[in-house]
Image (cartoon, rainbow, N blue to C red; front, top):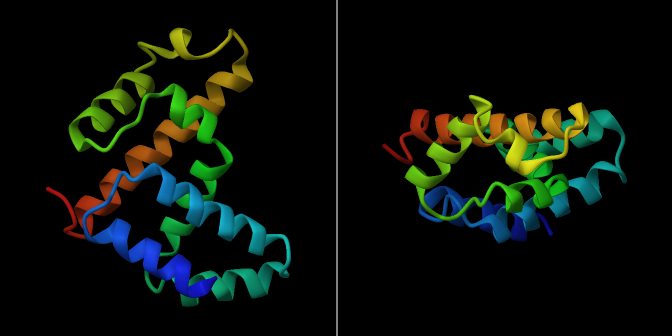
Length: 130
């Protein structure tokens, strides 16, 4: 499973940045392992799996756990579309269209949008995208 995770992460990092199915798959594997290891063992394992990029692991797990929200946000494989959509959500201009009036739903949407924005920022700072 470690090889699969590393291979998928590499594919995403090379040029498949918004392949949501691969992101979900990595997240699923990470979440499964999180519940079979102690906190210290899991953190060490993540550090070994994603040297200097542990933040990606948290992104993958968050997105996997909230795939229904990602789908509601209409994320696709376009950087520009995804950036625009996330910015709209974070500016609260489309939140009412995506969730009930529940403050919990809105927090989850904001959290997912924030993680996607961070992901884009990390990709840019790592020189993966411009």
